[in-house]
Image 1 (cartoon, rainbow, N blue to C red):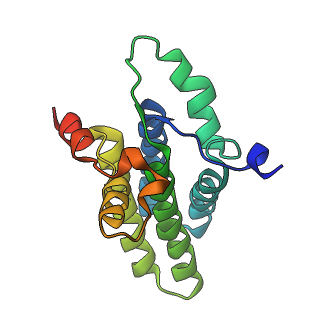
Image 2: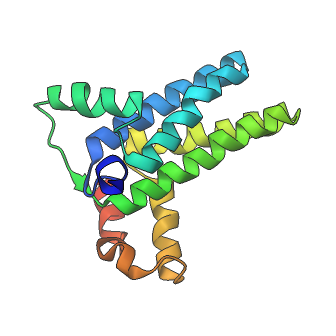
Length: 166
């Protein structure tokens, strides 16, 4: 039953990943503009949902994968490994959830810094297809923190990084 409800897609449509990142940028910018805690709730929930089950329980993920991406027929969709993207979603959860915790403990400046960092990372993903979480994931694999068996395709991301810059 677990595999049916939970799990992360592998491979991941990079177009969809970039569009989700654009939605994260929008949500983060809204928070930075209005500084209201409730804006972070759907942002953090979205990351939690995507970490646990990919787009299945994420309203933003479903909007992108079921409605927007399929309508982009003139776009050449590239598929990338899922494990680094899931790791990146976990980092987003740490930042957005950390911002909520910071606000709960009366540290709005910490929340602002966390969300600003999240906006920078999501902007890099959405605009340039440069996934900071994926880079960290690759480094963790090189250091042996993440076993190579988790993602054999990921152990050398230099080819994908070179392709992203061209």
